[in-house]
Length: 261
Image (cartoon, rainbow, N blue to C red; front, side, top):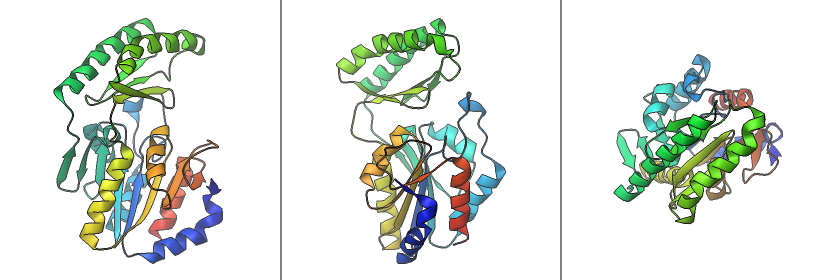
């Protein structure tokens, strides 16, 4: 990955190429720092104002694609002028058009069974909790004592293995969290492609695309958007993204540069 600040001239040239620009971002770890209790995260007023200013800038379209549920994400961001996607792209709103990936009753039942099994882990390990997003489940262990990690990981693998063996789910290990999703092709990258298609049809042009994310699930997007302006946030050394930023403060700084472009 290249240092973004050393390549602003190249990005500036890209932004000048087309009249339509799409900026897509993850939420946790990208627009807001990750904290121990995800439900307590608050989007700073300055960041919300910046997103609003970008969304009102001529030719700009803003989308937030998160692992949170759609309802939770919209409540945290609280802006009407942008595109939302929750549950890693399984559900979303492209302005007034709602999107829901067609999951089968069997798949939803499996996710419910997984939640019940995860609850046994929560009872046994203090500091572990479930984020129930209906379509997907997340098991957070940011507050788990380090000495309990080996047994916790072993227990989690034992609980989840039958579902993995059956080909029912995929598990992604993020920042002190396990994300459990139905096993299928659709992910954040597919929703990003859908957004690009919709905007391209609306504007009758091929838009400039920027995607910013900090998590392993954002790698799906980076792969799909090869050749676009892709930015990984954080200290990882290997990524499909083209550029890197250190933290959420640098994301804010970059977005501020774009809004004044």
